[in-house]
Image (cartoon, rainbow, N blue to C red; front, top):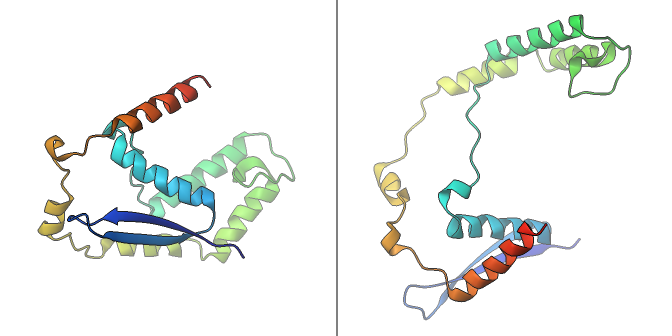
Length: 163
């Protein structure tokens, strides 16, 4: 089996030595995605950063609402006997039966009860020194990109804009 290692050499503050960071990856593509993610956070303005999705609380009320939506869609829509469109349980009798059978095997609402229970657990906040350390650096302390990097970036952007 082929293995790959994603590695980076980061110079120490005195410039005489390097810290080596290595992480096993499964493919060259995964290593490239890791590098592009880091590069994006270092080079791109904040408005271009990927956004996290809003938190969706999974509880029994959400499950009941989803089940009610699927059931009403099944009653309204054209019903087929067999369909293998498992992304929409209301598509056929077979997929609706599969949906209910799966949830009965998964103990129906117990996973949602566990989710509600874990949400109620005391979640310890981060220590203040970590919040202080995590604050962004002021713009004066930012490293300026080299002219060579800016020229290469301009060529790449021109290539992407050309399609």
